[in-house]
Image 1: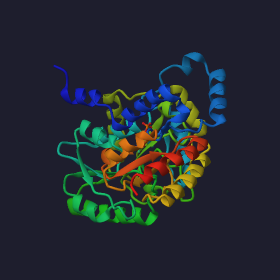
Image 2: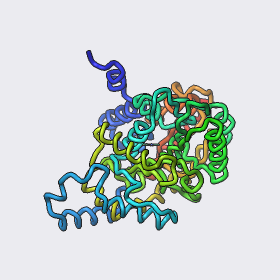
Image 3: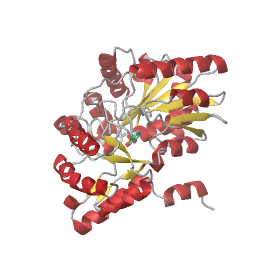
Image 4: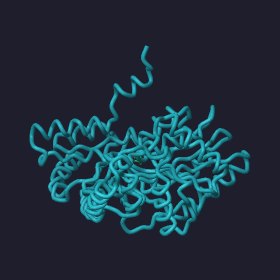
Length: 393
Ligand code: PLP
């Protein structure tokens, strides 16, 4: 007998992947240039030239046995120290490599962190709209996902609902800023407010409540600053990925960061190592451990995303669509005129526009538009959006 839950997960693809598959099929039929595929968050900007140069240098100058060999399970200590140093330079922190566990991107960082934290009966709070995989990850590591509704005025953290949702079973709150799917960056003030709330609740229930900060878009931000959450709340664990900042999603590299200031930090770091071991996430890709040791903190040319935001947001607003203005990442969240995202997305397909219904993100009357596409294509897509808007006038 095969595990039914795993069968169900594998047999039913995520809505995003399904739409992306449809896009690839449609591209083969009518030409990729004619499909306005805004489904998947695959960076459209190449990795910066320094990545290739760095890889060439590492390949040329590292003994081949070492180059392709195992590193220690949490990652090579030299590489972890280098990443910690770069974070310290940027944020004035004092991490060492011992605070870091290198992973295969944010997905594995999240699974490792959840497994390290989850005890029977634990609850993890997620604020809609949220990255759909959070629910899958939480449930598969044995926790209960508690979803709080969106604050549709700001799309920031919904503090009144968070206040109601936290209880004696709450182990952590997952937050994600810049956010997928809204592009919103949480302000310092809102992060201070959640920190005060959680500190009060920790007192009340006499146990730590962690913030799991999922940060694959940390550097993909336009005008605003992204506050560094460990400076605001001690019990923060960061789940980071280089997939978007360095445009390396296929290389699978990221980290879990457990600051010393977190409650039971030494035990938690050991539990992270244990979870990595139990899940088989040991020794992140060795070549890319060495690449990030040199290039952590650098980014691909994210100005392209800002340019796309500056075209798309005003254009859609002008057409009468109600949109959330993105501060970062490369997603725009848009309200469907009649509140029915599924039928809206089906209608959009008539114009070869592939948009993701908000259901999976916990907001069924919205759609997500991934504008990590060529600007020229984005400009051509506006006619299709106009035609779609006309259907609702
Ligand atoms: N978290 C969020 C919010 C994401 O948008 C993504 C990917 O799109 C991930 C996690 C997973 O990232 P990775 O590719 O590094 O596993």
